[in-house]
Length: 124
Image (cartoon, rainbow, N blue to C red):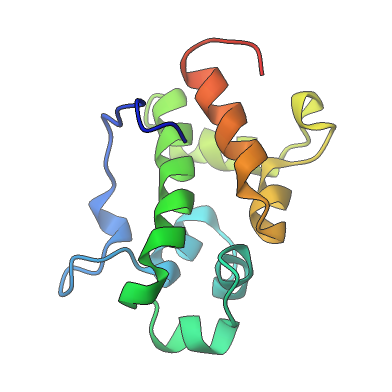
C-alpha cells in the first residue's frame, strides 16, 4: 500500500493488548482463516506463528495484511461481513481469483495495489 494512503480506521482487536503488537491469531480469526494461512502469507512456519503470534519478527509482514484488511473494511464503510465476502468471492479485476487466494499464496502486492486503486477510485 502506498505510504501516502492515510488509514482512518484502526482495529485494536487485532493487536495483543499486553504487547501492543499485531497478533497473527487475531488477524486469522478476523479474516476467518486458519493461523497457518497467515503464517504462509508472511513466509513463516505455522507452528512458530501459533506459538508466538505477536512476535516482533512478524510485525513487518503482519502490517501488510493488517493494512489490506483495514483498507477493505474502510471501503465497505465498516461492514466486516461484506469485507469477508469480498475476500472470498472471485473478482474479475483479479483474473477471477478471490482476493483471499493472494493472501493464501503470500502474493500480497497485487491485492495491495488493487485496494489502493479502489480506495482512490482509480481503475486497477
